Length: 362
Image 1 (cartoon, one colour):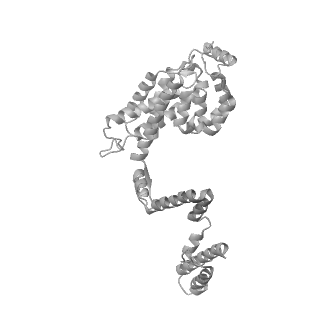
Image 2 (tube, helix red, strand yellow):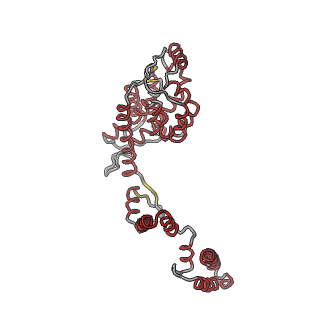
């Protein structure tokens, strides 16, 4: 049979489902159940690309039984392991693992390579030029890590050697090492790594048995590493397209935003709200925010009618009659079609602005 080697406190399905519902995309329910590799996998793949999170809806009861060393569950698991010496003998039962491993490996390969800053000359080449040593090392390493992680979730284990050999072999055969190649080549390389890892699949009869401190240290460090790779990708390599169609680096766009008048105005408004909070409390802060946010559209309406905030109701009404007469469509019938359309739009805009101010000021 399967040994009962968990000394931790009992786990509950209700808590697991609660964590799955609200924090499942970060794999928190798996960390709660002691399935750290599974939790890290979901946390770094956005809930297993959504599919892993959804699948857990029906799998959590089994996970809870495994975490609690339920004797009936362990007896059935032991009978299965005795009948099938290796997990690969029942590939139909583990086919989802192999399929997931291929796509996770492709994603990790992309992330590992995308984290390398593109310099001049670039470290990641877009053409078939000799790659840098770091790119050659990181691409297959990402593939291997993805395959290894999926191959060691739950009651299956596989040596990292199978994943590494398969990843580097697939990289050399199907991809130009270190290059972000097309998806077909990357898929074949990941499939090669996964196929070799399947050969090394074995049953896991014992839980890892790590203490809380060791678990937090290892997976916390890996989490920081992955967060660093995302940060490097977003800062050095991510690009955005601006209004005129030009492509610029994301960090340049962010830098320009923090130097823009819009950001200075936001800071100024935020300081006003904060100051009013300390002077008058939440009510004063809410009133100031409401005014700055122009929730009622008053500032927009005054701008349309070319008035300042101190304008009286009589001034607003007088200005409305003047602008409405100036831009009334009947006064532009003899002009070209484009000018008639512009006059109609302006007239409707003035009418709308007047209705807003009438509701607020009259």
